[in-house]
Each structure stands twice: as structure tokens, then as C-alpha cells.
Length: 282
Length: 283
Image (cartoon, rainbow over all chains, first blue to last red; front, side, top):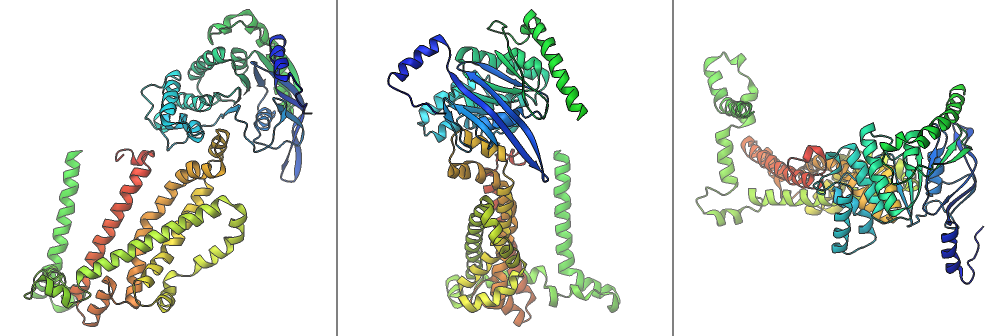
């Protein structure tokens, strides 16, 4: 599947980008089977999709549909049972970390023995950046996340929303071009969630990373994403693919009052409802 | 708050004074006042000494009140209280240090490797089933009557305690935290250094406090069975002369040695684990 770049490749790529954005993530025929107490079941069944440069794609589906499993395979955290995943035309190897890819967990995975500052600077520390440069970049990340005054605090002194901000910054400070997010705001209350949406929209509308965002929350997907991929109930299959044509910059509250939001919401809601009924029937 | 603290302090002092008074004069008073059958034999100073006698023994053994002078007294007895305490403290410290260092190292190794854990698992269980004290005569046979056999005994006692806790702590490390570290670019060794070790540290420290006491026990038992110097040796000699007050002196000194070591470990713990809520105040 890997095409060796010929002469003039870089130039061609630049022109491509102007014409049509290049594909950053390509998932083809992806399948995942699990063994649960001797019985095999299919979690992800023949899923194919692409994410282009600068797209914000939400992977939406009922719980248990395998959307996190897909994300973890894209991140190389989980081996796949079949199919291909390419990031920038290179096959993803399980266990191998791609420095261009950042990952944000749903669960709190901050290091509780490190202060906010030390957590955010972790990746830079590993990259052996000089102390002064590290301090500079950490300080600006702390400010960007609205955590000024908490730099020296330990995570347990922070609220859930603040902790997730730290986690987001810990990933973003390494300036990943591709961002994989596994229901990062799933554990937060509605109000905190809205604030996190605001923060994420601000950052993304400025920096335009390529994002693959897993969620089961339709409102969240419509607020953030430029495209929504809807998965069926287990086994996860591709059901529908929607463009979210709500203009940017978006405001997480105002966006809900646009006509496009309402139209897509009711349309996808029906589609999602069918899947929820199927889950119940099982 | 301060009121209840004063009350606690008051009762603590009251109990101390009561115990000392009963210990010092209880036997005489009860013998004078009660029929012989009602006098508890256990209070007889022959068995339990009494505070004034213990104090005198302390001054004598420590060469604080010797007609020949401090220096002459010290050089006249090569297991005087000073030497005995220093020897026991030194052996406890080294035994504790080697025991916990090797326990942590092996615990991390087996904790991080499923293969090694499965290979060595049964051996660890078998070795751990041996009462360590049963090995002391063997250790003395191998390492002789000197300090080495005491350090080895303390090591034996400390190693398994620290090993088991480190192993469990390493196993309990949050897998997602490890994944997060990897995704942020950490190598296997960096994960060990920056995630596994700090995360397992709480478990390690939970074992270090008892390990200090165990090290002291190991050294003293070693000294009981065969030694040239040390507080355990002092007790065995005093027993031979049926001198309860000298034994009590050694016991009290051990108590202070134990407290000092525990305070040292405790303060290191509250510094290294200052991110945990229970140590917040001392950070």
C-alpha cells in the first residue's frame, strides 16, 4: 500500500494541499475480534474511512459500538484483527509511537506525583528540551489552558475540568499534527463540558490539527466536528457520514441555535435511535 | 482544638507518671499493706527492676558516673553501652539499606516482567514460608560472630517484606498512565523511572516502616545467638547475671533507636509522597 515518493514529491504534495487536502488517516477494512471466555465476538466489522488534513472528524455511535476500539487501533495501542490503518501513508505498527500523533484519554491519566507544570512539561522533558525553553513553553501552555495560579498544584487539588485541561495541554504542548481523542470530556458535568468545548474550539480554530474525536454525545459531535461518522451498534460498522456545515468560529452555546444544528440533530438522532433500539433488542 | 490537645497531653503525662510510680514503689507498698498472697510477684524488682535501679545501671553502663573517669571506663569495657548501641544501630542501618534496596530492585524486576514473575513465583513463596529467625544460626555459622552475620540476618528479614510490597505496587500501576507516558514519547526505561517507580513508591514506603523494626529485630536476634558486641549481647550477659535493670537499660535504648529510625523513614516518606493528601500538611 505504501507508494514510494518519486521526484518532485514534496512539490506535488504542496500543490495537492491547495487543490484537495491530503489524507492523514486512512482506515481500510478494519476489523477487530475479541475472545471473551472462549467465545469470539466481532467488535469492529470492516470499517473504512479517511480523515483529511485539517479535518475535525467525530466518530459517533452508541456505547459498546467499538468506536474507542477503532481509535485505539489508530493510535497503535491495540493490535487489529484485519484491515489496514495508514497514517501519512505509513502503516500503523502496534506499540510504536508516532510523534506526530497526540492522544487524549477519557480517564484521568495525569501523574498525581507531578505538579500541573511538571505534568504539562512531561513530553518536553522526555524530548530533552533545555530547561529554559521548557519553562517558557510550559508557562504559555498553562496560560492558554486558563490554569495560571495552579502551576504548582498537584492534580488532586484541581477540579475534573481543570485536570482534563492539563491532560489536553500535556498532549498539545508537543504540537501533534494529528490529535486522537477518546471521549475526553465524557466524565465532566454539562457546564464544565461546555467550557472545555470552548477551549478546544479556540485552540483548534487557530491551529487546525487533524482530529479524530470519539464520542457518544451527538450535541458534542455537532458542536465541535466538521464531519461526523456514525457507527452502527455492535458489531461496529460504518452507518452514515455527515458534513457539519455550521460556520466557524463557533460558539458552543450559540451553535445550538443554528438551523443546521437542528436539522442535523434530528436527522442523526433518528439514525442513532435505530441503533439504540438494536442494542436493546440484543 | 488546643483544649483537647492539652487534655491529651495531660493524660499522656498522667499515665507515664502513674506507671513510673507503681513500678518504683508499687511492690514495697503492696507488700506493706496487703497479705502476701495478694502481692503480684511480677512487680518484684528482681524480675522487672525499677526506675531508680535502671537509671543507676544506665549511668554505670554508659560510663556517666565512674570513679575512674569516662575515658578509662569506656576503654575498660569493649561492649559498653555506647559501643553496643553504635554497633547495633550500624548493623540495623546496613541490613535495612541492603534489604530494602534489593527488595525494591527484585520487586520492580519481577513486577515488570510477567515471565520472570511466573518463573520465580513458586520459589519466592517457598522461601518466604521459612521463618527467617530459623536461619540465624546458619547465618552465624556462615558469616561468623562479627557484624556481617547481623547485617545478613537483618537483610533476610527486610528483603521479603519490601520485595512483596514493591512487587504488588509495581503490579498496581495504572496501565493507562503507562500508555499515556508511552504516547508522550517515553521509552521502556523512562516509563519505569518516571511512572512505575513514583507510582509504586507509596507501596514501598508502606513496607519500609515495619522493615525498620524488622531489621532491628533481626540484628538483636543475631546478637542473642552469637555476637561479640551489641545491645542483644548486653542483654544476654545481663541475663546470665540475673540483672534485670541492665536488661531494661538495653531495652529502653533499643526503643529509642527504633523511634529514631522510624522518624528518619517517616520524614523521607512525607517528602517523597508529598503529592498524596495524607502528607500534604508536612510538605
